[in-house]
Structure formats: C-alpha cells, structure tokens
Length: 215
Ligand code: ADP
Ligand code: ADP
Ligand code: ZN
Image (tube, rainbow, N blue to C red):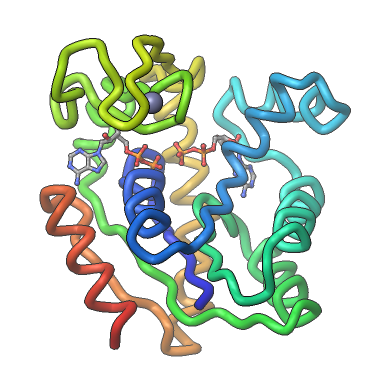
C-alpha cells in the first residue's frame, strides 16, 4: 500500500506517519527529513536547499523527486510507502506518478489532514523532537511522560527546527495555499482522497486514518 499524507505545516503528518510505521510496518518518506539530513551532511543538495528551507520556500521539484526515487529504490518491493510532505506541487504529482509506475507501485489513498490555520502557528512554534530518535513532541499537546526524557528511546537531548518560527511559518502556509492545495483536485478526480479532521486529538486522527486504510 502506498499513501500520501497531505496537509499544511503542523497538520500532523509526521506524527501520524510515525504511528503508521509502528502499527503497519510501512516506511515514512519525508522529503523534509531527507533535506534536513542533506543540509546537515553538507551535500551539494544540502547546500542548495539550506537557504530556501530557512526562508520557508519550496526546494526545486527536481531535487525532491530525485530524493524520493532514491529512497524507494532502497526499499523492499512489498514495503508500503507513506509520503509525508511530498508531493507539494502539481509538477511533483506528475513526477510521483512516473516514479511509482516505473517501480510497479501505485497510489492507494491520499489522506488530507484538514486543519484550522489559526492553530498551526501554535503547533509549529511549540514543536520539538528527540535529537536521538526523532520522536515528535509539543510544549503543550504532547509532552514526554517523564519531563526531559524521550518516551521512545530515553534520550535527554531534544531539538527545535530553525524554520519553526512564526515568520517562516506564515511563508510556509502561503506556499501550501498557493502550490500544494491545488494538487488536491488532481487526486480528487481519481477518487482516492479521504478527508480527515486533523484538529481532533492525535489518537482520534490515527483511528480515522486507520479506518480509511482498512476500507
Ligand atoms: P507536520 O509533520 O504536518 O508538519 P507534526 O506531526 O510535526 O506536523 O505536528 C506538529 C506539532 O503539532 C507537533 O509538535 C505535534 O506534537 C503536534 N500535533 C500533531 N498532531 C496533533 C493533534 N492532533 N493535536 C494537537 N497537537 C498535535
Ligand atoms: P512541515 O513538516 O512543517 O510541513 P517539512 O519538514 O515537510 O515541513 O519541510 C520543511 C521544508 O523543506 C519546507 O519548508 C521546504 O523548504 C522543504 N521541502 C520539504 N519537502 C518539500 C517538497 N516536497 N518540495 C519542495 N520543498 C520541500
Ligand atoms: Zn528518542
């Protein structure tokens, strides 16, 4: 099974992807994570992407589509893919069709996480992750069970993304509205979009997505 999690920054794509990975043994393909790794490693892609990401704008379609192709090639054929943060433009949608077809895969569902824009700034500015395992947390909505200790791996080191500030978030939301939201009708026409209420508590969102997957 291959699915896309689609929604603006802070909608809960990463949170839900991790839960699906744990419950169904699928693999999360996050272009944001891939790009951050490239920036950290100082690769040519990272050098090109760094300033664009810091500004909250979109990295070129060619770069992100190449990253996705490489990740799929490294996966077992029977392992399901969760696309998180990709595709983000109509051109990427087209690229993904070709990338999947070339590998004998097809899209089963596009899950739209519908959220209220006013809540996103609060979600993004309160977001942090475990520096060791990447598990996501939030200052108000998802704190570790023991303060300062990761639930999943026990690490006491956490980090925040440099682009998770209010000014950049506004640009990222504008990019989403202008370039990403218009891809929904493309998938709607194929009858594969399921709309899930992303404002519900995390467990309820997971239950709603799971209900779509078992249909
Ligand atoms: P995305 O990957 O779509 O940018 P995240 O999954 O990183 O979003 O979620 C953004 C922040 O909001 C995180 O700190 C996360 O803990 C929190 N969050 C995610 N889903 C919910 C939810 N349903 N209710 C409240 N907070 C949430
Ligand atoms: P969020 O979880 O908040 O939606 P991501 O981690 O997915 O953010 O992306 C962070 C940044 O990486 C984006 O603001 C953009 O600069 C870049 N990026 C990630 N995925 C893509 C993509 N598919 N196309 C273009 N740029 C991307
Ligand atoms: Zn951890």
